[in-house]
Length: 268
Image 1 (cartoon, rainbow, N blue to C red):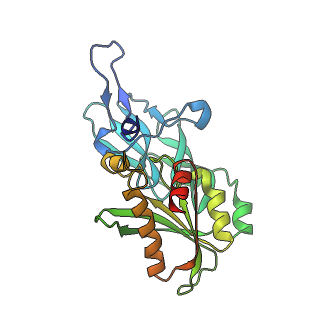
Image 2 (image 1 turned 120 degrees about the vertical axis):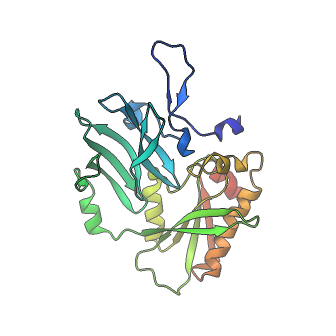
Image 3 (image 1 turned 135 degrees about the vertical axis):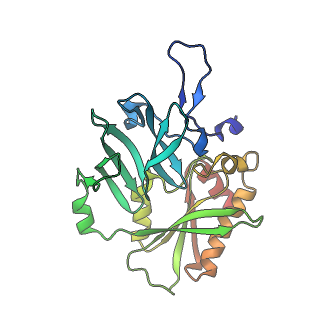
């Protein structure tokens, strides 16, 4: 049921010879791991060559980062983070270098390489979108936080149209993600977000209660309450942008997919 869908997805290990229950390596970070069939999206977890640690991807406050888990002592550390979604990766045979794909709402997807020990600089290997960057001014994105009526902190992402002028009010496009346990900014929607901002809209991408990447308790907070406090989380975000003088109260628009479509009809 929905309550089960709101729980974290875990990376589990089990002894090949059996005799022990599966053990979660990702539990210490209280985040859902990212994992799909390799044929669909690339590798999202891998053993290091020494067999002592596992690399895996997990969501964290709207981003997707690379983590390392020590199988023996259970410690987990973030290896590669930043404002981006790391989508998939591949290790060199010696386990020292990694190639990965990454995208963000303000940065089109590319293939990068980096050293796992943090030494040296990351390199863009693909340069697949250099022509786009040279031809188009992409909208910039910023985080914002605000308080729901019950005091819960809500985080959202805000895309500003190119040429944004402080003090000028803009039409607002509120985009609501699916799930309800999805999260923004989702990488498949890069073109949608940039197109809206390019057309002159400020784009609000909230992560209301029920969103993932903020811990299991936050993800479970909308179970059995669709259109309740999650709706309030969305509306307070809109009101906050009007209060800050960013959004024009006479030009407010809303859209979304899946659960976001449900919430759109609930809103209007």
